[in-house]
Each structure stands twice: as C-alpha cells, then as structure tokens.
Amino acid sequence: MSGPEFHQTRMGQQFYERTMPKLVKAVDRLADNLERQAKPVNIEEASDPGQALILAWVTFHKLLHNPKLTKEERHSVSMSLHGVTRALEEIGVDLDALLVAKDAP
Image 1 (cartoon, one colour):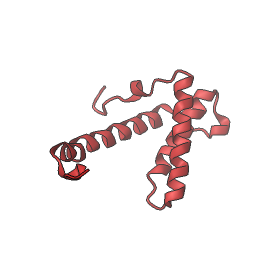
Image 2: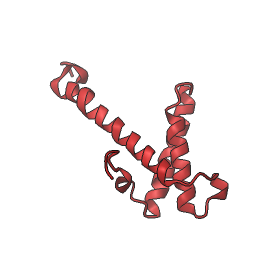
Image 3: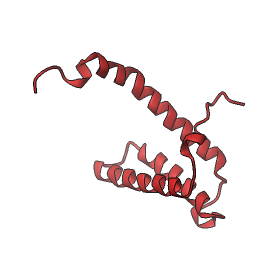
Image 4: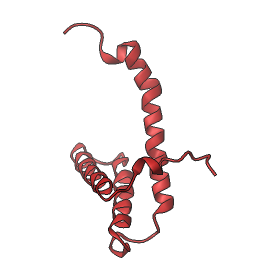
C-alpha cells in the first residue's frame, strides 16, 4: 500500500502532537496518585494483596521509564506491569478512578 506514512498525515500529526502528550500526562498522574495512596512499606510488609499489587505497579511503572534499561529488560518490565494491571483489575481496583487531576483539592 502506497501513500504517506502515518506520522506524515494530519491524523498522525495530531496523534503525536496532542494525543501522545495527553496519554503521557495521564499515566504520570496515575503514577503520582498511586504513590500518594500507597503507604511507604515493602511489598513483603503489605497488609493486603491489593496494597502489594499497587506497590508493585508503581515500582514497575518507575522502572519502565528508566532510560538505562535494555530493550529486553524494558519488554520484561512491560509484561510484568501488564500482569499487575490485570491482577488489579481482577480484584476490582478501578485504575481510572485513581486518575485525578493534580489541581483537584
């Protein structure tokens, strides 16, 4: 199929210039809110599975953004993060509800 590459189209430009920055900000807000809600304990000291999973999610999220990771390490962390996210959803943790604007009281 010939034609312009996605990034050369108007839709592609809007995606990279508007949508991606919004997604990054949303993930950052989620991580910030999870960190605020998670008590400063080790996963081994977590009082319940939900708390341990939230701590694991925050840890994997931080690690995923480490620029020193190799491609293979980043893939492994990404898969782990995906598994923790699924586990949180299975026990009823609403990750969308944790996305609260930083300016909210």
